[in-house]
Length: 138
Length: 138
Length: 138
Image (cartoon, rainbow over all chains, first blue to last red; front, side, top):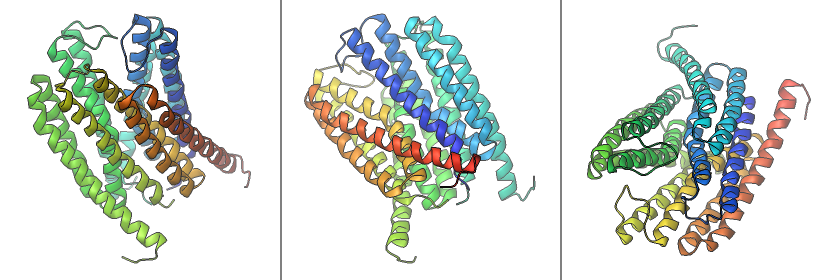
């Protein structure tokens, strides 16, 4: 197996994006003078904090689905889906900071991408299991 | 190295289970009318929220241990352990929603699986390091 | 591609460290008699809880950067960086438990390691993309 370098590139970029979003929470702490370990404060800070938490929760699921698609189905589709996910998450984060409702468009696009990638990954994995363990040739 | 497709299959299934558990928190929000970004409310909602958080915290550790076992020790054992972990986590989640105490059986089974997988992974990794860097043949 | 066993070894050790840090939160719960699902209490408990949360948030980013460096740049550098990260995170955790300010040295060292690993990983990935898709030989 050759290392899927495009998927690895998007993975590394997405990790740097997550560092950036973590910094956004830090900047929001400074702007609202909320010292750690406090996680409550004005609504805008709490929305920023929750936006980041949600991105963290989804990050692993995103990586699993992108890699499943990239290794077992198609690397370019997986990498493209990953970039779309990253853009959707940025819209989600910026929207959520403004208001709870404005988080929704980015959220649903990012969820749709994850489902799309997981579906393709599932197809690829089932094909390979049929091939490897049941000798069904593609 | 051939891609360990059984472990990949369990990984993708576990990611979909995590999406399902995230939805359960969303449904609990609706049932108790807790709008984001709030994370406090009636005890049942708070237990549901914490159950999901704990699953997120353990998810990465689970994946690392399952893949260590699957790549360096035995793929079928790793995949089977992964399925047992997923079932234990479902019991944990459903138990925690009912009461704090009912989370414990599922929790301890899931921790035991993680330790079991990490132990086998450690054995496989040490063997391979001895083989690769100290020329000790198995 | 041969499985990078040194990076896998550090990954498994770091997962066990995360289990240990999760236990530290559990012990702090017992010492301060904070029953789950509560996450608020005396300042020391709240700092311990947040210290663990921050380690969880950074854990994925750390793994992504260490593996990018290990697969596409240099395995020994990646594994060494991983060990330094683990030590820095232990200092961060122990410092944060004592006071909010004492978390900072360990935190900045761990962030520096992540950036260092991500930079080397990025160099390796760009080289491989140039090689694979643009036929530029190293």
